[in-house]
Every structure is written in C-alpha cells, then in structure tokens.
Length: 173
Length: 151
Image (cartoon, rainbow over all chains, first blue to last red; front, top):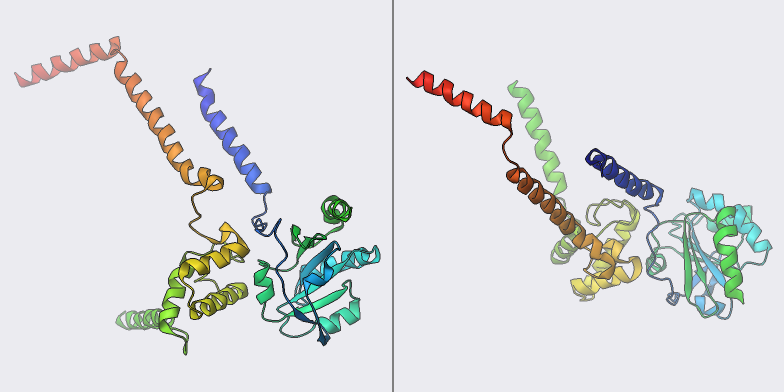
C-alpha cells in the first residue's frame, strides 16, 4: 500500500465519524422508560379541578401522553396535527406542564382541544417522574400501561406517518 | 491610573462577592451537599452545564427535588438513583462502567496503545537503518575540518 495514502485514509475515517455525528440530535436523550410501566399520577383536569385523571384509567387502550404548555411555540406547531389525529380517533391525553399563568383552559377553548383529558402539572413534578426535559414530548403507552416510545419534539405529519401510525396500529392488534 | 485601578479593583471585588451568595433560609449543610452533588450532574436543558451551575427552569426544579429528598434523609447514592431512573445515565457526567460505556472508558486507552505501537515501530525501523553513503562522507569531512582547526 502506498504510504502517502495513509493521511488521506485517516482523514476519510474521521470525516465519516463526524458526518454521522452531525446527523444526530443531541436533544434526543434515550428514555429509560421504554418498556417500563407509565409512572402513576393523579392530577386535576384543566378548567375542571374537581375531576381528576390517572393513567390507570386508560388500561386496555393504546394512547399517547402529550406533554405540552401554552408558552411552548413548537406545541402550537403540532396542535394542528394533533387535532387531525383526534379526528381519526387517536386517544390523546394532555399533560399541561408548568403552566404558571394558567392559560391552558382559555387556549384550548379558543383553538380546540385534541385531548380526551388535559391534566395540570403546575410544579412540574409529574413531568420529572416521566423524565421530561422540555415540551413537547409524547409517550406512546400500550394496552398494558407500558411505555413503548417517546417522541421528543413536535409530532409532524412525517413523524406520524413514519413512526407513530405504524406503531399504534401494531399495538392496537 | 491609580484611580482606574481602584475602580477596577472595586468592580472585581463586588463580582466575587455576588458569586458567593447563598439562598437564605435553607439548611447550609444540605445546600453544601446539593452543590457538591449537582456539580457531577448534567443539566438536561443546557447540556454542557452542570445542574449546579444552570439557571434553566428544569435545573431549578431538579435542585428543588434533590433538596427535598435530602431533607427526607436520602443519601447521595439514592438521589442519583432517583435521577438516573428518570433521565438515564445521560444525567451523569461520570457514566458508570458497563458494557454499553466500554468504548467510552477504554477508547482513549486503546488509541494511546495504537499511538505507542506506531511510535515504537517507527523508532525501531529508524534505528535499524544503516547510515547512508552521503552521511558517512559528511561525517568524514566534518572530522577533517575539526582536526584542521584544533591544530
């Protein structure tokens, strides 16, 4: 082998490593919850604090827990997609995370709610129990209450078509 | 000049003081433990900051959570386990030694060994090389010149 080629080969190997590194999203921290039961909670509903909700009520159904907040811009971006999903019969539960200004009820009244139920996590403690680092994050929960997938960042039509829809179909069987 | 120096010294002094400020009304022992522990934990929002140094809201919440657990009498190990269960090993700046992190821990050692081996073979080869004709001639020439000078 020609010795002069060695620096070129070293460079190419490094370039490939860096190219792979650039395509990864550092925000996508692998969730330790995949394959584990969804942490239990009981929280009051937004706009109707007398009623509470806990994840055990969804037993036997495939559903998604969508962590969002009225102050979150990318949540507004995914809102339209979530409305479409709800129209298709996808079961969504909203976790209104750290909404200090209590704007969620008014916002949902104005834009429409894609959720079966939206619960209020004012101090962010349930969010911490789910390992939430920011909004939006969405957890796919199967019939047995096991978390199967976590989507970090907004659900776009692409994410729905490529990842979530096939997964929900598989889990619903 | 002296005046400028005085102004600068004053500015420096106040800044240093601001950094030392401690939250009032908290148990100083727990605060000390929290600060030491949080130095080795990653803030999940500003990923290159420690949990101790970050001003992100989530970091504040997590510090509150750690503080509460310490008040309940949990030791550092239990607090770290609580965080790892929720955020994974990613929250640790010193990840544990396990099959998944083998490359992380042993990689540098491996590259050091490879580098050492390359260095060793290059040296060995260079030593084994016989001196070239040009070199021998040059040495002889140098010796002659030096001799001529010393006489």
